[in-house]
Length: 483
Image 1 (cartoon, helix red, strand yellow):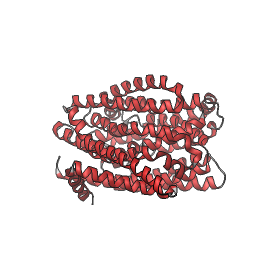
Image 2 (cartoon, rainbow, N blue to C red):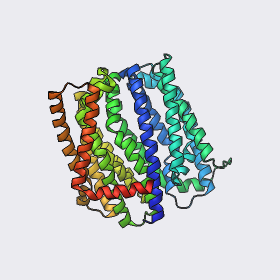
Image 3 (cartoon, rainbow, N blue to C red):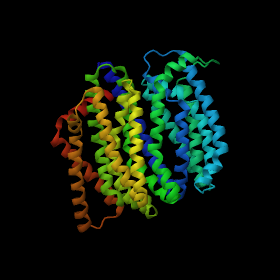
Image 4 (cartoon, one colour):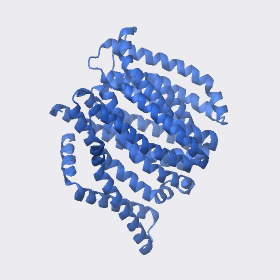
């Protein structure tokens, strides 16, 4: 991997990190405020609506985002054709969702779903205008611009939702927050990367992209059902209130995958695509990537598992106590899902999009069978099932990656060893700390929570340093490149 590409990756990680961390902090603050003002049932309804909106989002771009990034030689006809097909598809789905909204509400026995999902239909149309400029910025690794755009989108959502909820709009506050933020993102994207749009559609150019993207889209469709089957089962058979508890727990446990891992995958996909034929470099890059990401995600989730009860009651109030045990269980699966993300990066960057589709089919069958049995035990059973699935599918995916880049499973385990051992030591230290402090001092919950986080952080990094000090040197070198 040449020095120029390393610098691009480092800068990409820097700005993606700034973007994702800033957005998460803001989203976390917004979610706390909204969770205190609204009810678990409201979050359950939004979760159900998003499952359908996210499905349409897959068809909105036909997987063309990945094809545009991966293609070595890109022409204007590729971009123009992609733009118009995305607009056309979103318009069709806009009409479909407007008329099908009552049927979805009837299926879940919740009339409120109808007006909410129709507001989200506006978001679907607006998002289609963002696809091509957003993809081009990612292809060019212009993550600094994307950071400010994403931050602007998040702020627009938060301001809109908070103003509306304070004025009595209830659950509609979240729906309009999403819609307005989509407008803001589209405007910012076109301002930063306008593309020459002509009234034309080149079928040859479209086919060139679609030959790659069709497998990606197939993967994304199957992945959609994998990611949402638990929401659908809980919403249909257990109700909106249990779904609200489960949704918030799942989102917390999957924060490392959704936020931190995406920071790295957004950068590694275009970077790995540039060196897609050099499997030796890819193998080294892949193993280093999962080492570094596990160093961050494993302690976060291990710490959340130990501090879940204290964290939820202190931050979200006792109204959300029923999500504590599912959250703790999901933290275990979240550790594995945070690194499973990079399996897809290898598939796509090397042009093996067919592997991603096969992988997703295996995953769909696996999670369906597991949840089919687990559902009878409520949201706790669902949480256990999802965690078991996360562990098993990670092993399957890793075996498939090995066949592409000729890596060994033992190397994969070694890559995760520093974070695993250090996190285990941290968990033990936290348990002892909480027992001692709880026995000797009567600290307010907020002070106890902060002191526990600080204690866990110190224990983890000290353990990591003793286990593998070379990792710190590598992290410092990466940090210097990012500055």
